[in-house]
Amino acid sequence: MKILILNGPNLNLLGSREPDKYGKDTLKDIENFLRKEAEKLNVEIIFEQSNIEGELVTKIQQAKGICDGIVINPAAYTHTSIALRDSLLAVDIPAVEIHLSNIHKREEFRHVSMTAPACIGQITGFGKNSYKLGLIALYDYLLQNQK
Ligand code: DQA
Image 1 (cartoon, protein in one colour):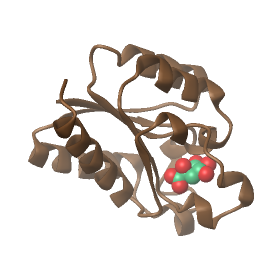
Image 2 (cartoon, helix red, strand yellow):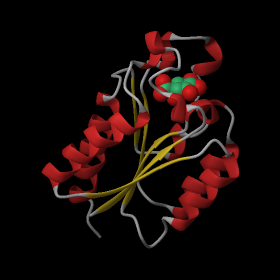
Image 3 (cartoon, helix red, strand yellow):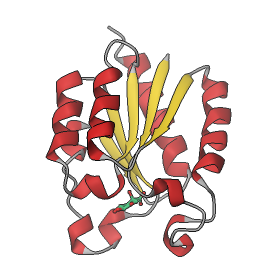
Image 4 (cartoon, helix red, strand yellow):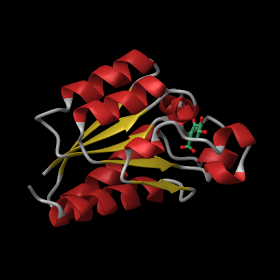
């Protein structure tokens, strides 16, 4: 099983970026943490980040026929990007949206997700464990919905 872990804008700054909200781990720390979890499940992960909306769209498109699932933290594009939502729908690859912080506990503009309706579900507010929980939920879903 192969799963794309896709990270949106400013997540490359984790560690120094608003640590009170996003924790002290860098994105590399999160990647290493998730690789250990993936190994336990015998899942191969491709871990990517981009600050550019179109690049994220291209990465989703390129996952077609290669990845069985996508764990996505679209970051700020969560709240704005119809393009990301459409690309998730277009490739029809099961996806789980995740967030480090609880977006429903924050500013009102963060309560809306453009991308979540194109996903199986959303995990929000568990820090780096959101990535782990997202991976496990997706893994379980894929096992139960094997084509
Ligand atoms: C985030 C939440 C978003 O609202 C924000 O724009 C981010 C990070 C999170 O993981 O908590 O960049 O996706």
